[in-house]
Image 1 (cartoon, rainbow, N blue to C red):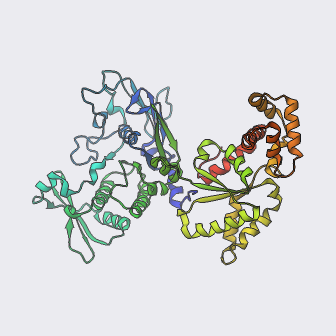
Image 2 (image 1 turned 180 degrees about the vertical axis):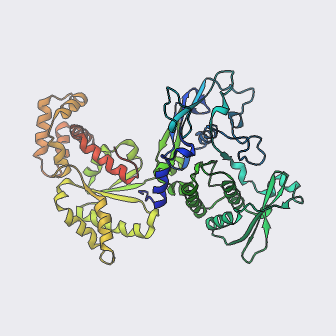
Image 3 (image 1 turned 180 degrees about the horizontal axis):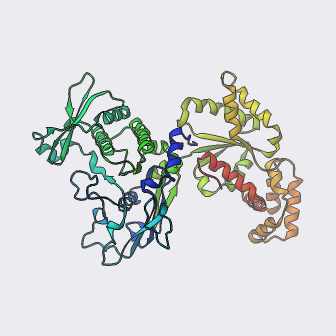
Length: 532
């Protein structure tokens, strides 16, 4: 399903790459060596909230760690309870036993949008994007932490969802927690968590002891209860938004498995609230996830998929939620149905599409053009009822129907006579109706190319045919009659019809590569990707 950008998305996309005052992390590049499974990779951040998906062991959390290590902080900067320093170092994340191979000869580069760079001959600009480098030689230490750009960073690992009832330190101090002075943001936190969970909280405060704190809340018509009796997700949200309110504007929040403890609707509501905070207070949030709802709530600029292939790590930006879900499950999920008239058109589309697009789509031969448009009308009814739960659909009719586009749209509208908003339906179908190349039926366009050079080359290479033999085959196929072209060529060559058709299709589109690119770009557009 193509993502629909909200006004809030547009605002976040506007400030994120342009505000030099927030020390925005734009890129992480592992330029030398290997750290865990990351080697020779570049990860770009293009939206204030980035969700990183991938299977277990794909190094998602490693990206969070490398993000945390991009920045330093002032001695009096914000730090989580229990932390010694208000910043992170590689030793916070990359801990090794004596049996493990020591890290060495590693170079990590961070591109940061900043307004206080030191001006040098290599960097004449004080403000704008620039690179800083962290490196570690074999047997040595990571270089100068205090030379890093200053920014408040908070890393929230999976231990955050452990409820107080399961924390030994909380249980041992349960009689010592004392009511603390309000900080002024408690009402905001209470309202935000209430929106996310759909709950009417009437009060929220903290009780504290030493560096520990215990949330106390009340709901309408219910007794007061503490963090000892909260669900894991509820406690996590109160803590998350308390931390956000304690941090200065422009902070970087890193969250491992952001969806933990939250049902799907709460996950969706969480992303909406985080978008508001990013727009208002210019926060940057990077999280990991296995959740399709989280990905669905973010624009393509906010989605990254990390995949391991042998010893390599592949970074896939802008991945669609359905494609990511298919990769996570190991069962590719169809994101787009492509409706065509017959098996010949199906073979043409499947042959022309890139391998990536074939794995994400299915081509469905329906019958006549009228049957295709009636089927599309039925699908429209399904989509307007199921909304974003329905599979997206588009149509590729034969080229000889392109002169009758209005007639095809009217066939579609006949199915929807009972709908009141005919104009909306017409706009919808016009975006989804297109045609295969040429002004003839597709088989004829295939066998009467403008140039035969690609045919000569392929058939000589694959079947040892001379140019004269190729000319004779194409001429016979051209004279065979409508929809008999592939059959006639296969009969001449005494080969399977599908095999010969595949040779013909590949040769025809190689002789006119713009047509192949048009089809691939069309499908990428429906999958929410930018086209070439």
